[in-house]
Length: 480
Image (cartoon, rainbow, N blue to C red; front, side):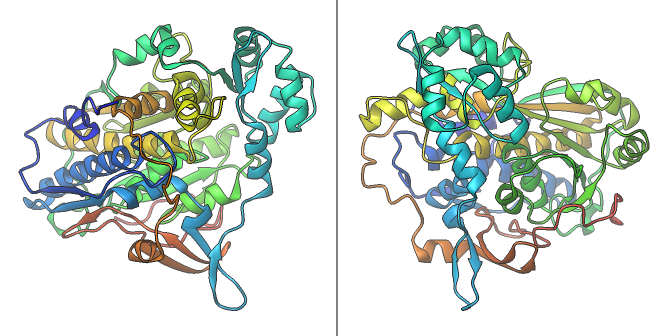
């Protein structure tokens, strides 16, 4: 399938102002890094390059200068690996080796797969986090083993199971073909909207970027509240941290986490504990909002609104706020209220069918990486910076909305490749070392990780601090 339109061009169409000058952005290299027909590397590289252009816009507002940007397609593809081979831990012998896969993640992966249904279709139930797994098991009335899940799914018609899972506030989706998804009302809703939705939700005076011309990075002095967990949302906030923002992660000790995912998306951030369901702690969170520039949330749709932290409420509390929402199904539509994950988005949008057909496996397959998660996070960072630039020019509070399903649709618009059977699946040692960042004495040990892969001529993205222990910082902002 030919590439119909470049993701970079599509994203630039969402940005106000002239296109970057010739020679400002260089994207080199080519797919495939992974055994997949999708243009994983080039789509991620386009999104990262767009993010860098948005950072460049903010840099120009501060200094009047623009920078040269470079992104390598293979390095961009490797960002979707998250941990695994891209996070090494130093052993007692001093050697760095890939971090072992978490047993909890292995368990989730073994169950979160497409399974055949009673009406000769396929369904993907999602099993991440214990309380969500319990909801799926209660619907299926089975044990948490692959064989038991397979047998249980086989007793259901696909559409009936999808509705039952949704009614239980669990996660899963019918595995649709691309054609079936195109004919679905949720697809029609998303197709009529940009891949990054930016909406003005309030009026306020223009705000120059904090720190002015003396800032050392595009987002120096920008304060970000990060109320997200597990990959897409944390990647959005990490995108802002890499360009100099002060990112404060807000979690509660009671919330379940996936430690390797926390480890790999928390570089350059601080972490505090606040439970927004507790009155006094919610009050402290509102105080933090009053001093924030960006609020990033990745909870189930309407969850924040139910607790008084919806976009309109916070825009009234802090005029000029940029409110970023990351979810599975998008800003509305018949599935807009449902929660979901990367794998669910791949299933419902046709990506699993395309991957399985290309592999000639006889069944739908997930892509080798969490493609939608990382792409969605990069797009959210891009949208947040576009909104900050608009705030600087004309004022206002803004809502930025991105979704895993939109990201899957964006990847599919890039067309397919045929020759991927010999794809290596990882960077060479030399390629990895070119971007590697060492963090010593973290709560996870001494780490060597794939660092930021964007290159900018004056302010290359970086991690200002090691990945933190959860709850290790006070609930306060740093001095600007």
